[in-house]
Length: 113
Image 1 (cartoon, helix red, strand yellow):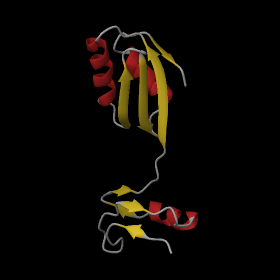
Image 2 (tube, rainbow, N blue to C red):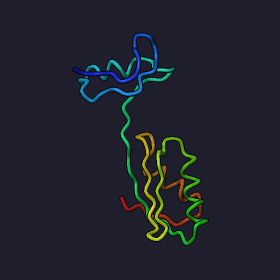
Image 3 (spheres, rainbow, N blue to C red):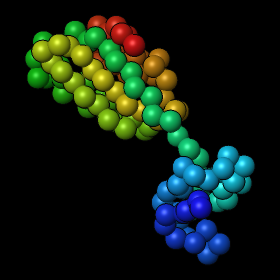
Image 4 (cartoon, rainbow, N blue to C red):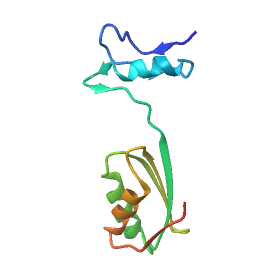
């Protein structure tokens, strides 16, 4: 049987997560129920990888700081030795958004995925 983890939707209390067993039709209905002033939606996480010309910890911090300010970016991992930046973001953030943010730091950046 499908389960809802959290509190009662009927009472208007926030539902923290919906189990995967709920059929798609029921998910569509749940998406239309206001939850704390917003609509529930299932978000996919996108992973983007970039080669960024960074030479020091300051470069790394500059890129990390810029990316962490963007709403929708969930995590940033930077491997300075490999000059690899990995970004996990929700579906509202495109690869081009991330690329533009990194370019604003003045670093040369190339998408690798």
